[in-house]
Amino acid sequence: MADTFRALEVSESDGKYSLAVVDKTLDQLPAGEVLIRVHYSSLNYKDALSASGNRGVTRTFPHTPGIDAAGIVVESAAHEWKPGDQVLVTGFDLGMNTRGGFAQYVRVPASWVVMLPAGLSLRESMIFGTAGFTAGLSVDAILRHGVTPGQGRIAVSGATGGVGSMSVAILAKLRYQVSAITGKDGDLLTRLGASETITRTEMEDTSGKALLKPRFAAAVDTVGGNVLATILKSLQYGGIATACGMVGGGTLPVTVFPFILKGVHLAGIDSVEAPMPKRLSVWEALAGPWKPEMLGTMAEEITLAELPAAIEKILHGKMTGRVIIRLPD
Image (cartoon, rainbow, N blue to C red; front, side, top):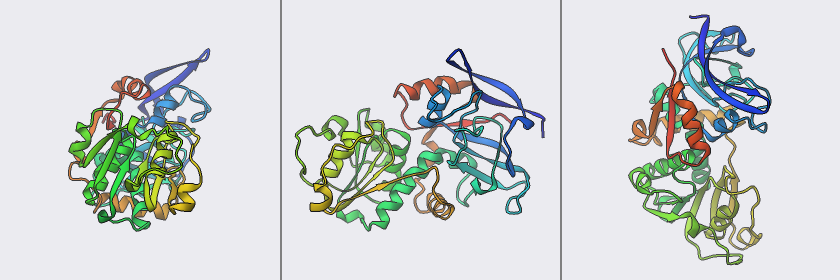
């Protein structure tokens, strides 16, 4: 094991932030019971916010982003993990205020670590990453609500993004009819199994009506704001919408009528602090019956050196699908 390793680091100078691939030492990593040699990470919007100096995500710089990591345990002070274990880490504080997965090594608390499920490679686990895990939590909520494929279409907003594209692929694998809502090219969504694409403008109701014609049995919303409000007003009686994003705004311009007249449900999805039993059950499902056949081709693979350009792309809304990072050997 080398004393130094490569990492993408965000530095601050006079209120300006810059990115560079630098050499770090193991003693610069935070305290934690488990040292992991990272083989793959993935790029999420939260990583881009951290990399651009967003203090709501990361308070202290210099910093290494990366809220996802998959690799092999090299050292462990915890009895449940041993050198050679293939593991993954998503959420908690990784990549936020704890140095994250855009590096060859991370050191984390043992309670953050998940054993790589049988049925997934390290690479495949990061094609899922936090985006896929969040999609999995959303699908789990819909299934637990009792929505079956025969009840109607499932809407997915922000469908070309990480969570959205994963949700489309998982739901299609489970034989649901998916209505993919997007402001971008829908060809990707058709390949992932969407039954139809709907423009985002069509799902931005401005009529002022409290209720709209029922269109969907359930929905996975990654946008928030008026898109989520329109979805809620468009659910069938007893339908459910999951909410995990707010790129469209943090307020919800909707009355109580969908809830008290149509019995609809709104389920908040949190992938950061999800309890370990839930994590394990969702990861097992992602590795098994929910795993899309095309998973291996659902991401662009880049290097640490290519990350700054990819971060700029996702910040400007130009990213489609998933991007994973292969760490150098």
